[in-house]
Image (cartoon, rainbow, N blue to C red):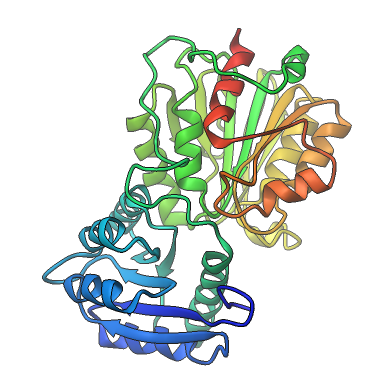
Length: 367
């Protein structure tokens, strides 16, 4: 069911300068009885006008358009008629960078534009579009305008200094010795992760590995973006790379990442998705955190942020069995309270915290 609320349809506005893409998206979504296509627009300026006039529940927005590009249109929509916006982006480094700028500006999620004459590519695009629309429909709209609300990026902490103390519901997790941190996220994760790691000091003494559901072309530019915005070093992980203190490794998209024990500590091991067909989400948070728990003998902190589904629960379960500690994002600040909820319901969450507090709590392990 894709309806925005019980008994109502999700009203969608399609904004794209390509008539082919407008027809393709309309053709896919119009077959869903719970979706009502309320209009289309051929550029950003028309998209802003129709967003204000039609008041849709959701907008699919192309990035590269004449007259007014998608990001500029998005910013105007967030200011004049705040609406959930799903960006449609190309699978390129430039497309990735523009997509992350759009997420910072208030877009709720994105879908890679990968539709060709290939029937397989069309099927993949159709399934991904329906999935993303479903997630967007169920998600919380946390930000009414760019830079506003619980997921807005925090000021960058001073280099080399510990984060300022914040009130905590409990300090029980900080009695546990850790050597590593594993973080997982999905829908809403790109902005949420930026918020979390912006609170972690440059001198944090433990290695951090992140698995976030992204395509192959996106994780490299995402790591570069985070590295430019945060005091701690962030980079895309490569096969055979050691997990070092004070560095955040982003698991590469399009494949799975696990951690294995090496001579000097944990080492990244990447593998094609065909090696692990049991994992639906790529890269798998379950595989990353579970393998990290095993390789570190439980001497780690596991963190699960916003996202659809339950990826991360089994990994956190393995971590708890090994004696590790866990934090999950709370419902109020999650774009989608799926992955964190699975951990809470499964009894593997030591702390359930608002997004703005999680980075501070991670930083406390440095003391």
